[in-house]
Length: 340
Ligand code: ASP
Image (cartoon, rainbow, N blue to C red):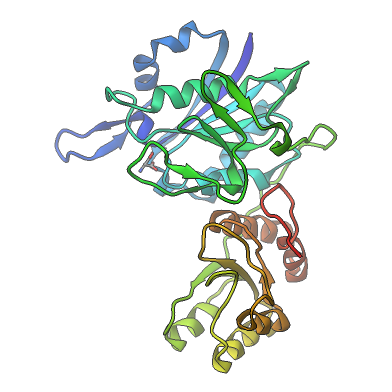
């Protein structure tokens, strides 16, 4: 019999309609259990930890992430796998940050939820939860098949730090365009073995320091210089700069001067693309050559969610900006592919 630990944080899966306002509001795990009598028929021993309060995932934050990571660590030895029920809106941020906090994970940590509440007739909650539980318990000779933080949605298991929420209306809410799907659930569960992380020979280490001094500069043609200056001068250690195409920006001198000034003051500027598919290639075009020479960092094909949370994690780990700059360009949990 498999032992699975469920962490219930909230999200649509367990919401009910407030009669007065007509909005969906979070409800306790009892609602899920009541609507899923099959849970008790499963060949699993389930332990449920509910967060207080249960939250819509728009209210997720580093304190809750640290609590989640601690719960995994405290129960790590006694369970075969972990399923975290979570709202889909910020699920990719939580999955990304947990992947950094839980180094050398040798058991599955699967985040899932649903687009329709469990009480609705056409709900996707049942399938998502059942499939997440099945994958969380999958082992060969006592070794977990999945040894990383993932997202399970609409019959697909994705690497958490490669995923983003791309659709708020379809059951297919997530995609992972720069990394293959890890498991496809049809009649059989099809594992993409070559794409899975193998942490068997690593040590499991919990990291719980996160430094949220991160800002975002999303560029658009004609962006006002004062706005850019304000963002670059904000009280942060790193700035995620979302650029065009394969990492391009205007070549205007004032713009490069502003970036250089910020870098000289000790800020890290990380270049990731506004495109969801493909990678930053610094120097491919003249329009990114200048960035490379002033020390803008390469985010390669990282998702926005992975970039922001990886910076929080690295800043928590390292006081020296140079260490953060060094590690942000390295693949540490399967979150990026270096292409140069
Ligand atoms: N607003 C919800 C949340 O993220 C949406 C969902 O669960 O799908 O908590």
